[in-house]
Length: 125
Image 1 (cartoon, rainbow, N blue to C red):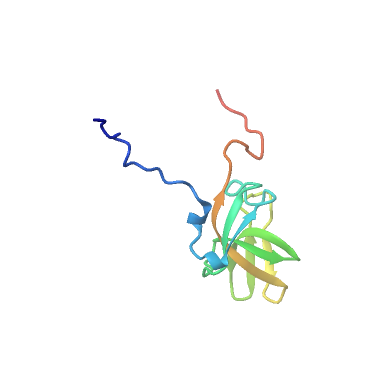
Image 2: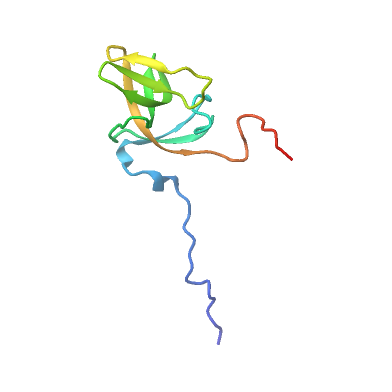
């Protein structure tokens, strides 16, 4: 008579990007281009963007501005919108409420590879 394996009842969960999706009908996967959100979000990261979430100040959002997609933190006031990059090399963008501007969605996750940094890093010994 054979004894059952102690690991027989142990099952590993598989990683599925769909598990990051709360609202399937309004969630999109986008690829980040550029380094404006470094060090938080890297070039070529996969962004999970939910278009149904209520926008809060300082969230990372995808916006359409000047006929381009931008990924920035957002701060809204009565008369203007401030788009803030995490990378200090980029200046804040001030958008008036009258300009052609669309808040496209809220970034809920950024998936990035740890083995390929976007810039060379010197290691200390």
